[in-house]
Every structure is written in C-alpha cells, then in structure tokens.
Image (spheres, rainbow, N blue to C red):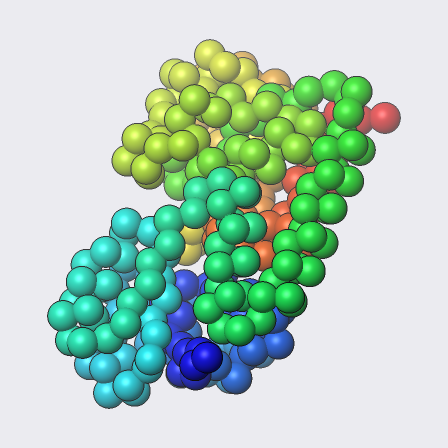
Length: 260
C-alpha cells in the first residue's frame, strides 16, 4: 500500500501529531503560526497562514497531500483542488472528534498502531483529570477567545473546562461557529463567573483590560483577582497540545480559584 510522502500542513495540530507519530519526515510545509514542537518552525518551509496560503508556492512543491482544518479554510482548499492537488479538510470540534482525527491521520500515513497508542494515552489523561475533579466545587468560567467582538470558547475548550471541574458559562454556544459565539458584556456580568480566562488568538491578552470594562467590578473573578491568560498554541488548536499541556494548565487554574 502506498502512503503520502510529501504533506503540506495548513494548521498546527497536524504538524504536532505527525511529530508524535515519528513521521516529521513527511512534512513538506507548515503554517507560519506553528509552535509545537519548537523545532517545527525552523525545520520546514512556512507556506500558510490560517485564512490565507501561498497557493503558488504550495503548487510548486508538488505535495501529494494537503491537510487543513475547518470551514474557514474552505476557499484555500477549493483553490488547491482546482489546481489539481489532493486536499483533506477536517472539522473536529469536540475532544472525541480530535482523538478520532488523530486515529484517521495515523491510518493515512501508515502509523495506525502508534496513533492508537497515542489516543489511548490521551484518553487515560482525560479519565485521570475527570477523576481528580470529582467532588470538587464547580468553578464558573468565562473563557474569551477574542476581545472585539467578545467571543466565548469553542466546544473542545468547554469540554476541557468541564473535565477539570469547571462550568463554561456559555456552554450553550460552544458548539457553534465563531460568529455565533459572540457574547455581550451584559451577559458576562449577569452570569458572574468565578474565573476569567483570556486566550486571544494572535495577540497577547491585556489582563488589566477586563477590570476596566463597564460593570466588571461586580464580577467575582475581578473582585478576587482570578483573571488568567493561557496560550493559544495549546488551547485554540484541535490537537495533541490540549491533552499534553491543556489539561494540566486548566486544572491548575481552577484549583487556584477553588482555593485550599
């Protein structure tokens, strides 16, 4: 059976997964935003941003497979398909779907056994943190992906919060596309979260800005100084980073809020 030998990765999670499967040799190009593992940024040509790619460069490299993520990259995919390339776009939104995508990628590159082992390890970590959180006081969390407009968190982050013993105050919006996860200051103040977590994709979070918003002084998170920043490279990509570092970081934050 023949497997892909030259893969362009339009987003970061595929890169990290291929490294974990021991197949970084298959990677022909990466996103400029790739951060994990650290060597990936220097080991491979940067051919893509999230919403745009260097189509001519990608075509000239003659990859046998291009892998991307989400409806946001549909126009890139359409153009590359129109240029005769094989393109595979996934749309995983939940932790379960992320694990399934790792298994699928493993099969696509002939590393099914390694992918199964990786998924078993990640599943065990989910179970471990779920058990550690049992019986602990629930922490109400507002997780902000973007500040203008205010965007609450995507489904996999919402699930991570719950596994670590928290409650996403906008859980009812977490399964939606970004445009439908817009929230207002009035809603946030009314729901009165115990913790605020900022994770702005592409720019540093200004933690002091939260207390300067209208009526936020009435929020428990502001009153108790429970405002945190987390790394988008860990929390906003649907891949291994969530299990390797996201779980422990989220649990650490919620434990701090819960107190002794």
